[in-house]
Length: 193
Image (cartoon, rainbow, N blue to C red):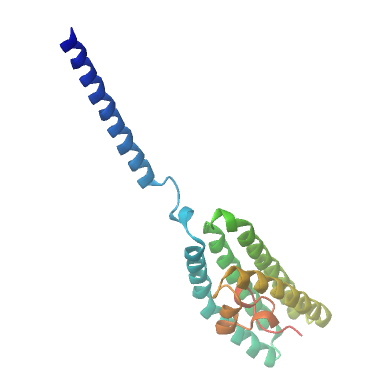
């Protein structure tokens, strides 16, 4: 009887170890799968690196459109200037959409949402400015420029404070007009007044 009891205890112990090993393997497999995007586990520094890469890829085209905009204004071609402004606003919208697809660390999500929302407000102002440019409405153009400057200040304060480079004022200095423009690195160009 004692031998039979010892045999049962040994089998039970092996079964527990075996099921424990199975559970461990399943847990490791599930952890390896992740169940979501790679962005879920980004540190703040990794998030900033990815977001800045997105902003940087739009910077060159933004600078080109800004130059075209300025040339069109110098040549009094308001239609072309307005179109360049709208094209840049469309690019920035695409950039903001890409930024929104990145998953920020949970503790930073509210700040990132606020930065993106300010970027979208700047795009809206740029679209109004483009309409004003196309119609030759100088008053609306000046008002949009003033609103853009206020939004740019708010945007860059948040973005720079968060740690962005290409998505912040450093990116604006490298590729676009920045705070003096309607949307800088995350928006449309040039001065509107």
